[in-house]
Length: 404
Image (cartoon, rainbow, N blue to C red; front, top):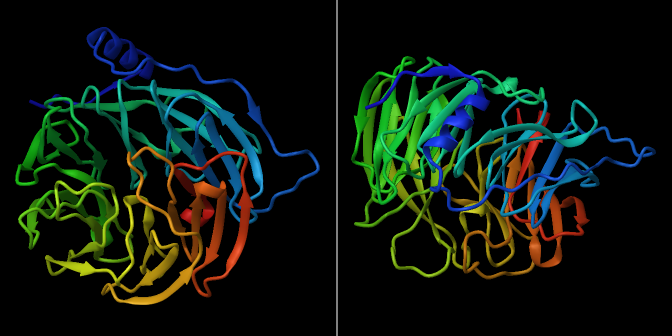
């Protein structure tokens, strides 16, 4: 059963969770370092975009235009970074103790952890949408939703709290009408999605989405979720399941824009496959409710970190052969440029390997083997900026005006 949302102070929520779940956490909390580094006093940066790069030991922040280092923060453990979705370029850094808020210095001029920590047993997905952000705690199934622009003040915002039926690796998204979509599952399996009213009352559910993972909202606020046998769509209060053509046809990540009704996802047909390289994409026309599989050109293989959408709704694919590929919305390749050295699939998903983020007409590409990051103009394929870092880049995110 769901319970109505409650507005509580985050500190109280964290304390209650700690009491209820003592001994359940799989990793011990880590303490963030107070050390931060700003850009030198004689350096002036005009860019309104920042690149936040997680690495072993912290997060590095670069200027989005020049790729000069702006600052960095230290934080222990395996870190993930997500765009907070606000207009001041904040970033959620997920660590063993929860969701930290990172100020990338766009508004304040200083790169620093703000001190805001949304405590979590196992911090999972952070999903900003329509001015509201949902944080999912995989360790408890608890969802916390708050105003997106409320972060960065140094004080945790007022939140709405929603409980899942059981703890699981999940995701939630609040829609513009105030209702919420949240996944269903347990620690052993996941089955689908439910639709909740603003007071927590369940309006609908669909449990025909085994291993549900990943979400994305497209034009018209149609939301897709990946399943191991297709995708699940939600539109105007109703769910629609689109079956994959293969018995096992798993989609786990959505690549979408809010200006197109066409969504893409990764696509895996072998449940026993070793490694993470894939050679097909799934294409979903959310208007016609049609799903099809796009076979990539020979030699083009990618991981979930290697796909993005451009400002023209093209699909950008970073391939393990070192090429950057531009596909139109039908899935046909239009351009291909060699940008980094060829590389092999990681053996574990957390391991650093090349990644891609696309903002407008710029593709940002990391090359951990050489501690490099590149910015590539998608009109020409030319490198507009590059930098060699002092760390091996892992996950990264691009935030700021270019992303809004």
